[in-house]
Length: 246
Image 1 (cartoon, rainbow, N blue to C red):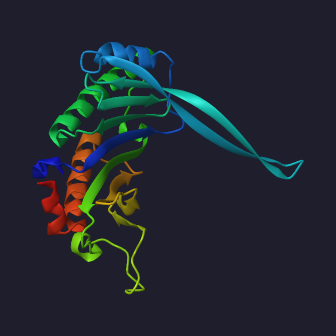
Image 2 (cartoon, helix red, strand yellow):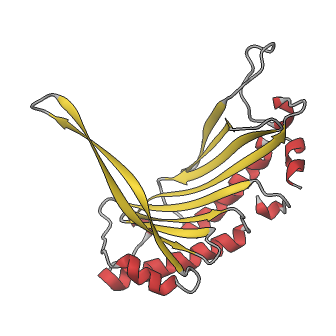
Image 3 (tube, helix red, strand yellow):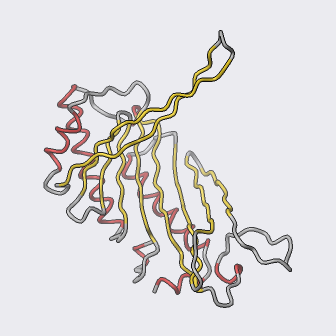
């Protein structure tokens, strides 16, 4: 992605998320202690609202009950506010929004912040996090691809695309996706149309690599996931599209 040295990067957000198992130990002082450790690189503190929907079945009334609640998630942002960390009770995620810098920069911040988080959890509750405590790892790249509308032909820009059933009709909108599995990881690729204007057609391309079986160290896994995503990104698009980023 950015390692390919695009002058006009299509990346809008990158997310690396670590989800812990349900029995993961937690202490409400962890976010505050964590902020004290990372505030030199992430000096801005905020919170975001997360909507939670729970479904229950009332056996007496034989009906489903839906409960909705709001949960505040601590957020820690860098000076430019385009890189931030979210801490949930059962996980931690690292977000890099526009303008994306590089994998080396992003992964080094992950390494720095996650080690601080592990140390804080150990000091706060005497619990050492290991791979056996992790339920899921996920690395996701979200790209916005802007293509001139004049004489647009889908096959000239996307190698990964829907099959045209009626060639006499114009394809107005689409969403297409696939999941590929290899070893203990999976890669989900999805492309869909987005709101466009009279001159530019917009498309969202997301590549999401994840695993529910954590056998490697998380940074080693993320490095391999990034390599796979970068490779499939190039295979998904034609050379004509790639030229738009230079």
